[in-house]
Length: 107
Length: 120
Image (cartoon, rainbow over all chains, first blue to last red):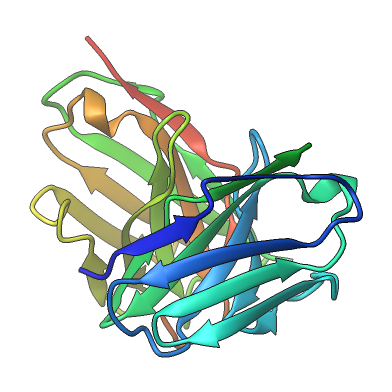
């Protein structure tokens, strides 16, 4: 089973700052990695699929990069609504797993 | 616009079977892969498995011995059964749809989730 680790566990930033979140896979997942945002009491929302493609309706301040085992989600300038938990998800060998999440909170 | 709605008991006794359904509205259940994902209170997401309307399934190896999924195309819904539940199965259960047809892709459409508590 491919294990995903995310860092940092918590990221404390101010609105307008840049957020950089990391996701690392225990073995290569090619580019089959997605990012989700989850707010309290809500279902996750797909942000990025296949490492770097924004999902429908996602603003351009969200971007993804990486391939193989190392991936990054960047939020170029944090808006108040961006403070949430972010999960990465891989799909490889017909199986999916999620990372443990990174919480982005207000400094 | 397609919408998903989970339904089922909110309380299940230990050792019994958890049964949930996800009704798909605003679109057809055919051609897509459909997933179940759960989240224990205050914790992260765990992928349970997926099913295609044609019957193809794949389950999380850690749950495989207890999980079963099915699709009812006449009712446009799919279902989850999890046997021999314990308190560790207490979670919010989400159903979700793949982003694109014919592919076990990332999940772009989600239900609101339903809390299932395992307790006597």
